[in-house]
Image (cartoon, rainbow, N blue to C red; front, side):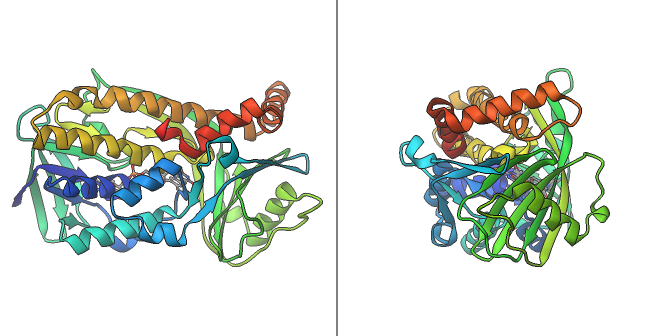
Length: 393
Ligand SMILES: Cc1cc2nc3c(=O)[nH]c(=O)nc-3n(C[C@H](O)[C@H](O)[C@H](O)COP(=O)(O)OP(=O)(O)OC[C@H]3O[C@@H](n4cnc5c(N)ncnc54)[C@H](O)[C@@H]3O)c2cc1C
């Protein structure tokens, strides 16, 4: 077995693992990133696309912001639609001038991979980590299978950035770890279409048929979602049916039809909330989806993940470079306070925008909440601040 030595072994090259590697390298901390999938696969994985104000600054400070600043779309507002009417929430006016940047997660990943490879930092693709060992000792290790056979990385700390189905969160002992979970009774059918966006800002829509979201990834790519039943099958949705349903839900008198184009990507995502606590076991520290999942309605998944590693990089640099262990003890509780705020906001947006066909009382409450969000300056301000910069609050 090939044996390597480093200060921090990072499991997973999603946004969390890659940014952590970059932040640590800038602080002079050696690290190795191990990723199950190929470079091509991680760079093509279409997922999140809304970057908070403070998280965009973090990406820039890490040295990975050049393309994001050039090609990202800065949005100062967001639209809500219901009963065929549109209401704009002026995010920047309500959140001290701050704005969101619309830039695809796969582009963030591409920028971070390029930076890593340029700097010569070790990034082992096609290497599935199978075992985490000695997590409560002074010399933990990570074992995996790479293209050239088994590999073992001995380190000072392990960062579990391997998403919700990875190995890291399973290494937490059942006796001390807790898992808080909610599954929602709907899923999202998402498409990526080669169509110029019909609108300049994101549109969140509540319609009696269900939720819809109009978003975009670039001036030529639109990303649209439909709320569907949890057991819905992709093969039952022809292109025509998808566009008809998007039009039925999103139409207003001013915009009776949305622009269409070839669908280049599609998928169905279940809607879940998960929090795993604590986010630490011995020398293993969890970050991102490995520790928490939010339904995408609040656009918080990637932002929460990157905010975790902002703190984790500081925590590990303090311990390894400055011999200051104090942040190690508080990493989990500090993260979890912010994570629960992200869970609350994602839950609020989800419960406000997804009608429940069998619960008229719930639907009445949802409409009251939605009207308040667009008509009350106080409610809109809370929404705007959480949407634009929750992870810096
Ligand atoms: C289908 C889908 C759509 C989404 N849409 C949105 C959205 O619209 N808006 C939003 O805000 N969020 C969205 N999210 C959530 C968002 O994408 C995540 O929160 C974000 O990817 C978290 O980053 P991460 O680095 O923590 O985890 P990931 O991006 O999941 O990265 C984890 C990495 O670890 C690797 N890995 C896993 N197991 C191992 C192993 N054993 N060994 C080595 N490597 C391993 C994986 O291959 C992966 O590259 C979506 C998620 C999914 C699944």
